[in-house]
Amino acid sequence: MSNINCFALGRINTIPLDITGNYNKILKITNQAKAKGITFVAFPELSLTGYNCGDLFNHQELTKAALNSLFNLKYELPEGISVGVGLPLVGTDGRVYDAYVILQKGKILGVSTPVSFYNAKDQRLRYFCTPFDDELTFIIGADSFYAASEIYVNENKIAVVFNDGNLDTLENPDVIVCPEATRYELNTVGDREAKLLEISRAYDCVLLSTNLSGCESGSDIFDSHAIIANKGNLVARGSFLSFADASLVTADSGIYEYLGEYDTIVRAVSLGLFDWMKKTHSHGFALSMSGGADSGLCATCICYGQIAALKELGYDEYKALMESLKFTVPAYTGEEQSFIKQHMMPQILTTVYQGSAISGSVTRTAASKVSANLGAKHFEWSIADLVEKYVSLINETTPGDPLNWDRDDLTLQNIQARSRGPGIWMMANRYNKLLVTTCNASEDAVGYCTMDGDTCGGVAPIGDISKSRILKINQHIADNGLEIEKNGLKLDCPDMSYISAQAPTAELRAGGQTDERDLMPYVILDRIHVLHQSELMQPKYILDELTNEYKEFSREELKTFVIRYFKKFAQNQWKRERSATTFHIEATDLNAKSGFLFPLLNDGYSSLLENI
Image 1 (cartoon, rainbow, N blue to C red):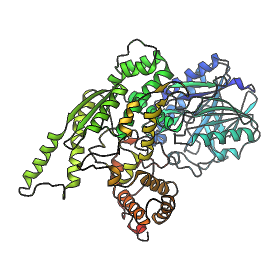
Image 2: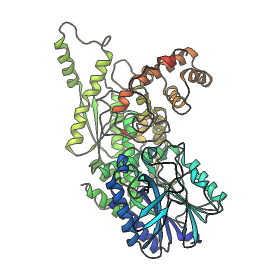
Image 3: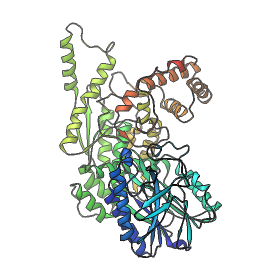
Image 4: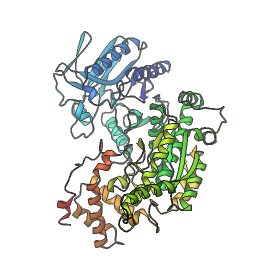
């Protein structure tokens, strides 16, 4: 096993609680590895059960099923190969532990657990017990195993490292396995990889690190990061954000070259949407296409995901998957982009431009152009009569006191957004499509959205991306397209220029309404968001920072922006708690379920704004 070519990494797109399905993927990859002469395969953390099993991690039925699956694996493994898999195990103290088991045919070789989850903020803290105890043991069948950081496999000492806590226990390992269950987050993989390479260098050994793949259970997207290193040198790196259900990375796999920032963000969102379609057995997506930046990016991500899946899976596997979802897949033309746009996107994505009495030709043209560029089936209709009917209903209840824009501005804006909900929901329901909502992180922060209006939908794919970044991504799409593979296949959507040329607008009020006029410049809003979430600054210090950074605005203007941000942020937590599921993309995640936690009832930030 000292030969680097004997090692491999298994990556699987897990489904929580689907122990049989996850098990079959592990066994499939192990058999592929055996055929290549591999003698050890490392799989990710919690690969047998899936990561997001929630409170069922403490349920006996789940832990028993996982243990039974481990037994089955022990006897079904091919001869001459060892594997490492992650699963929840009950210790002799009756508590459930995040465990990693190394086994070979007919034999369990050892069990490892994290020494500590110190300083961790993810949900494992809620479900798994720490601290590690040197006396901790596990009963597996007739055998008892102490939790150990190092396990002997064919006379080689393999150390299992979950985090920094395990490093303190190592003594000259031959191989370090780093099983991961780490969700994708913008601009973090470089630091993670550099740290892994440094561990390999510091311990002068082989290092195997592999992460889960795909959007496992709704919000978190696992990035498939998988590397083989030797004495600090990178030997192999698997594809990032893989669309494959199961894949093998060996020393011969080469070194995958990362895409640029904007292409990678789109790939992450696209993978999330693709998995949602696949795992909910939906017949594609429905989208209210406003002709604005958010809906344009959502539509592009759907198309990108289809091209990327076809490229990575190959035609036969892609065809089988899509036919299982009731799509018609014709004979392959041999060119991924044109095949997807011409034959698949009209079935997969339905877009509707829902104009009102206030809507203009610019957004209507943009919606039509981008939808056509991507191959979506596009419709147009007007909600003007619906809005007029609702206004008439209210006016009839208050004769002599009709609604007017001076007093009822918000009411008249909201009814337009809400009138768009029922029609697009009907399209989604009729054709078994997922309804995509187009909220972004900036709007979520200040509640610049209409509940039961533009927030309608089951998934908000760009809900964790700031608006200033979305505008840059769209400009990148218009100018350059999106890389699906480095210096290779691209998605082209030049008509995104019809969107990127516009100032963002909700288009709910006459007179040239723009988002930034209603709120503040998006770069300021997003900077406040980052300083508050990441730097944990109080409002008065944020104002000082903005004053230094944005000389084009007076301090009084910036003070107005800061006060407006925090008042709206505090008032609109209820909207964030009702929002559709978002994908975790940026570190400053406002997801009320798994991101920044904030009290629903609060003081409106009044105490912290007193001394600003």
